[in-house]
Image (cartoon, rainbow, N blue to C red; front, top):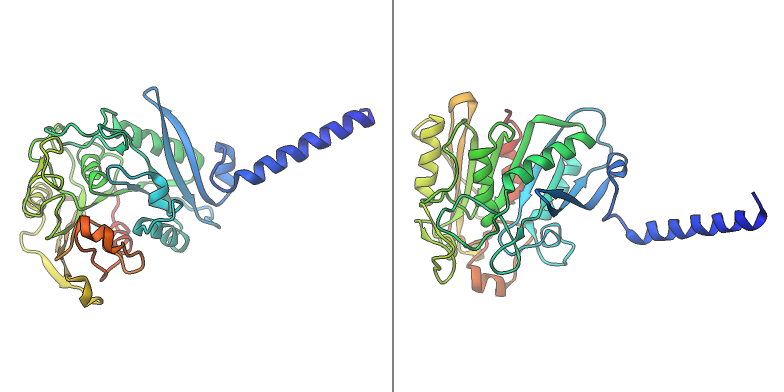
Length: 334
């Protein structure tokens, strides 16, 4: 090799190094995913559409198989809002702290744009028209395959959590992907009373976490949005949604109850957890009834603004949603 060619190669190498460094921790190839820890944003083509997702990989995972958790955004929310990269308050970024401690892999998938030009999930609401027509069950199933091919995932410990439209999507996964998902958690969400989903086929543990003052998804059921809007569809009440699952899973009819300490009396509410145990295949159904809570995930550390609460009503500050959901997930297996 000539001296001139050697200098050119060195310049190209340096340019590549600078470009890689400037890209930061938010992009990685499939091979890099297996070697590096951190938060990465990826793209995958599913059913002809390019889909985005963020994945968080903690350090020092070790050689054992790890749980995989999907956290599904609400309608109109981008994955940068979920991970905190947008700078907004977000209880969902706290999954990454749990991942570091418990050695989990966290995935924040993103839906395709719906009627209002922002990300949505095609959940089971048969009388709603605001979401995209994507096969999001196939999207999540494809992501399980892709991530399992790059990481040591325990196939018996794959879970899905979501809020609002994401909670409704998590419930769809409970119905239609129960052969791959061990448990789901739905915050500010309920079962649709006009469903496009297939019938329930397999017992699965389900958690609901709903506010009694939710002004977008009414606790007592009915039409969604604020003001109520027909294109957003309708849902059963929270209590009826719980009953559907306790009946299907054949759990105990009477729940155990626990009221959490009222850590913040100024948030205007309290939380009581109702646990229906001893279902088929050790399934449980859990309800966190957030008395006085609005359309949001409870959080102690990530508190929404007064402007947010003006539109969505009060956020409870007595528990961390992510902590309670992980407590629910951690002993569930397929």
